Length: 121
Image (cartoon, rainbow, N blue to C red; front, side, top):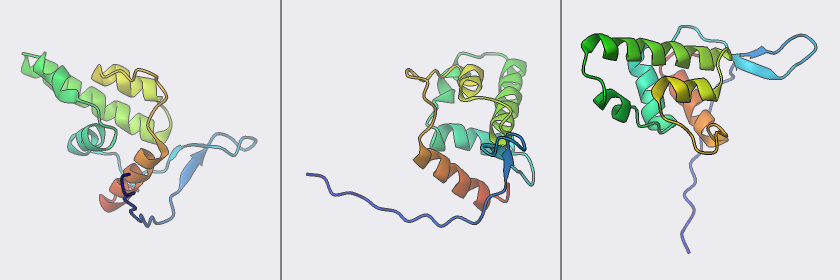
């Protein structure tokens, strides 16, 4: 039997964007600034566990790679603000989730922790 590993995460309050006045559910996060390409790549690779290197290995042209980086950064910023879905992250990176359920709650907690450390939230 494996021993459970427990980690305590302390988060500061997070401001969120609501769907509408009638619908109080969260749509996205209020950002102080947009994430950079480097931060977006870190989120894809280390938090959401997307293997974007496979997509990059298929690209030969520098312009194609630059477009890929700008596209995945834009999609990540839209996702954080609630303007894009999990599927759009998969489409932008060509890394498709088999069951398409999105990231776990634990991944989103890790995401908020990372964004707070980087001063994005």
